[in-house]
Length: 65
Image 1 (cartoon, rainbow, N blue to C red):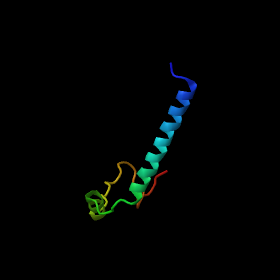
Image 2: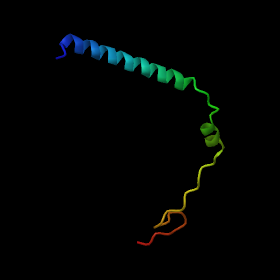
Image 3: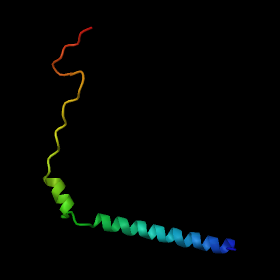
Image 4: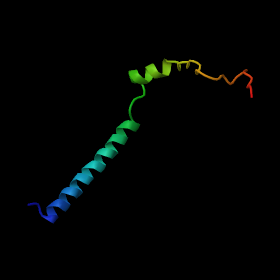
């Protein structure tokens, strides 16, 4: 059976590893190059036009009451 001291040591170790990995992830994310193929493709693309919504039209339509 695992003792309380062993469980405490394991929790501290795993928590420390998790924090180190989080800091490393943010370090690499901040310092990553913005010249990736995905970022280049996204910067070239234009937003798609949405089709008009079905139903009542707001612009230029008179409302009958």
